[in-house]
Amino acid sequence: MLLRLFATSSNIVRFWRVAKRQSTLSPLILHCGALSTITGVVSSRGYRGDSPDDSKFDLIEIPLPPWVDKPDEPINIKKRRLLYESRKRGMLENCILLSLFAKRYLNTMTESQLQQYDRLINEPSNDWDIYYWATEAHPTPEVYQGEVMDMLKEFTKNRNHEQRLDAPSLEYLEKESQ
Image 1 (spheres, one colour):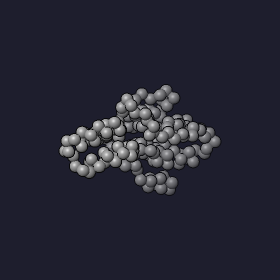
Image 2 (cartoon, one colour):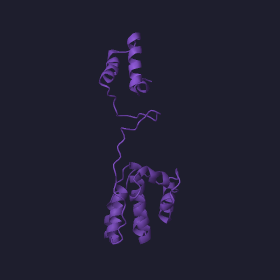
Image 3 (cartoon, one colour):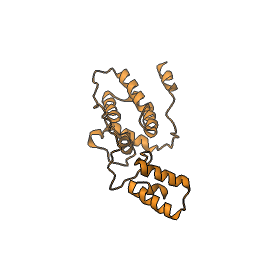
Image 4 (cartoon, helix red, strand yellow):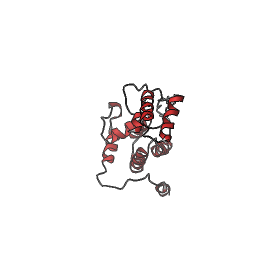
């Protein structure tokens, strides 16, 4: 309840006046309200929620370089890069999902499938999009729909009920290279 009242500066002023009149709140809470009212600074940390008066000035967009196909990249280098990029994602869910997917399928993918996978994991700027497409929570855009996306969707269903709590260790790579 108190957090909701702190959502806008006008609510802070109103809250301060009511609390001061009723004297029902501790001095610490009153001090926090007074500090933000006096300074005009409301902490930008935490969830603000969607509200009609939210200007979204606190959002920062970082431009990402566009995805560029690398047709001359040797297959073994491409597989290593894609394995690394599958493991180092912006969110843990995709790190686990894509690294396990890469462990299972990357070495058996054709050149065309590798290009589809490369585009799928590197072109979208939001990892949540990839996750929602793989779990079929959102429809997959036509540009990413294909054989690899179908494989990823099927893998995500986890029909064998495998325990997928962490990215796989890299020990399996040593066994394959021997």
